[in-house]
Structure formats: structure tokens, C-alpha cells
Length: 448
Image 1 (tube, rainbow, N blue to C red):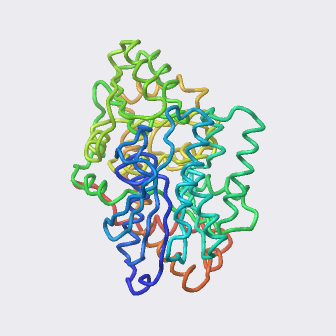
Image 2 (cartoon, helix red, strand yellow):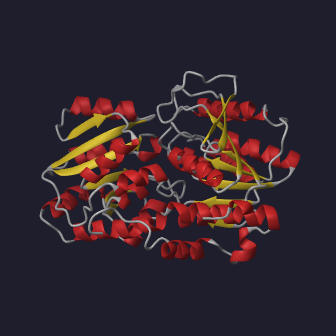
Image 3 (cartoon, rainbow, N blue to C red):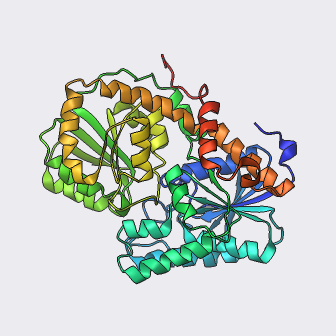
């Protein structure tokens, strides 16, 4: 870990679109990064919304005009109110979400005290717009972390079906993004997509969504399941956000038509959760069940109890996002059954590292064949388990946070952007370094 003497004088503003107690959509990772940088000695201020995700409701009962301020784990937290859509699929309401977050944050522009660097997380464009305005007014460095490409994700989620509106969103996205000095993202595929957007040859750093500390504590308590035989029936799990871009209902309908012997537990919330729940109730297929979001310990235990963790991405999602749930799944040795585009970050990840079966949507009916093969004892299943655990070493928390911290030190103290000391393209080189650095640090208990 870095010495605090290197970071003590660096004032850092972090603008995420969600932090704990929100659990999905990267919230736990953003929170862990804020606390991890504070732990390393940075003077961290966090400006974020009141908790609302993925339920799309005011979970605190305090969302409004008042700014809530408190300290937690060494970081100063400031919560700002915003408009919470009642219908997250409405383009008008999603625009109001972004606009309200920007206007709410803008009240803090002329507060006393300035920051050496601002790190902002996308997909919430209102936060990116605020960070861009801050940089233009007061200078300093702006680091944009792209978790979702909002224009791409909106198109994939059918929020923007009008071509003119979609192109307008792409233009706004490009303008906002190119105000930043440094970009980072969570998969090589997304970095390739970002290269098409940048206009100033900004360095783009690969920073994967790691397994945050409290979740890793739960994982370490579990026995090693590599080599564990598949259950009868085969136990499938989907847990997390259920939104438009997942296309989960389409997959459920395909699975419903299968004769395979499985138990599919779905636990989550979000814009499409009601439709999934009503479909399960209407079909009365006993192989499907629906439940609420798990707490963190329950989430990890449910993954460990499952044979396959299901992740779906609606066709056309492209490079817009990479599911953060991949890391905790594979750290338990649980293979992932993915249905996605071949060139999506998820599709490429699974096809390259072979930690589960992957299907394109046009061949999703082969789900039935995969389950029959697993039930009959295919050796691929044990291979998927081993490969899952091996790949999880890439997502090591301390390596990832130390890397971000070191880059921030060099940017603020020495005026070096990552590209200037790491070569013309950081992503591929950094991925190899992380795999090597994490190779002995991350195992589950037992005989791993």
C-alpha cells in the first residue's frame, strides 16, 4: 500500500452516481474506492445522490433540496437530492434525473475550498456535466471513469429509439467526455469503444471493477467448490439489477420452453422486475422463483450455492457496459452462463477465459443442450469452475486501488498523465501486470 505521506496534501473530489447503501450498478465498488483512497491518505470528498437504486425509490426518506453531510471511513460524504423517475424507461424522466442531479450539485460550485483533482463516474451524465463545469471554472485535473456509455446503453435499452435523439445523445456524450484529462474504463472492449469518442488522445486506463473488501470477507469464509458436482435439478441464479438492458424476460421465455431439469432463482429489483415477477406468477412454471435483492452475505452465499450464475445482455448492447457481478461470481468458483452479443465485453471475456458457457441470442435455444450436457457430467463444468477461480485473481482490490492512487499522485504532484509514463496505450499492458500481481493474493478457503 502507498505511504500516506505521498497523498496527504492531495484534495480529491469524487462524484459517483450511487454509493452504499445502494448495492447494484457499481455502488459497492464506488464506495470502496472512496474509502480505499481515504485509507491511503487522500483528502476525499464525495458528492453523490441520496440512495435510490435499483428500486428507483427514495430509500432514505430524505431526498430533497437539503444537502446531507457526514463522515465515514475517513471520507467526507455530501448527499444531494435529485428527481427519481417513477418510470425509468421514460426518456423524459431520465433526462430530468440527469438535469436535477446537475442542478443540485451546482449549488456546491462556490463552496469554500478547491480540489486538486475531480474523479467522476459515468453513466449519470449530470455528474459528468457538473465535473466538466468545475474543471472549466477552477482548473485542476478531471478523471472520467466510464462504467456505462449512456448513449449506447440508452439505445440498447430501447430508451432512445429515435435516430435523431440517439445521435444527439452521442454528441452530448462526446462533448462531456472530452472535457476530461484522463479516462478509465472496466474492460478492453469498452476502452476500444472509447478510443472512437476521444478527440484529444486522452490516456485511457483499464481499471476493472474489483471485489470490494466486505464482499471478499464473505467469499473467504466459503469452502472451495471447484470440483463440486452439479445439483439435481441444476441450480441457476440471477441476482441484481433487472433493467431494460438485461433482456432477462426474453431469456426466461426461452428457458420456459426447455424440457431441462433446472431451478432458476431470480432475485433483484429495477425497471423490469415487476414484469419478471408477473410473468413467473402467470406461467406457474415451478422451475422459476422470484425474490427480493439479497444483502451482501446472502448474495455471496446464493452464488456459492448455485451451479451456474446467469447474466443476460439485450442484443445490441455493444460495448456499453460490463457487469460488475462477474467478479464476485467467479471468485466463488461459480461458472457464468452468459447470453450476449459476441463482441460485448462480457461475451469476449467469457470466450477468452472460458469460465462458463456463452450463447449469442440467435442460438439461445441451445440453453437446453448446455443444461443436458452439464447434467450428464461434461468435463467442461469442472474446467469452468477452475477457470473462474483463476480469472478472479485479475480483480484484486488492493492492486486496483493502488494503481488508481499512484496515477493520481503522478497526475497532481508531477503533472504526468498515465499515457506519458506507461506508453501509448495503457490497457493491454496494465491487464497483464494486474494478472501477475494478483496471482497469489486471491483464493477461497479450502483446497484452492
